[in-house]
Image (cartoon, rainbow, N blue to C red; front, side, top):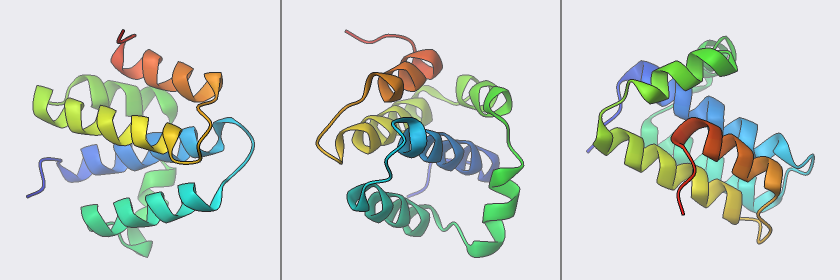
Length: 104
């Protein structure tokens, strides 16, 4: 079951890519995870150009307008991306906190 609209999917993937690149190291586990997400969300090669057209502010506004259920799933996906390489970088955490608020 997919709870995201097309625009929401694009915003989530955009944010995941930002988290993946935040520490300056793209780990193989991060690549595997983003490929899993592409498959899970039905993202195609053709969608990647649309995704690249979304800037950080647009992605943030899209995330903020999501339903609570979609926001919770997106947050969980972002946390997974930040943890998947075994090292949660503060720059990754900062992106997540900025989008979803600091969660203690």
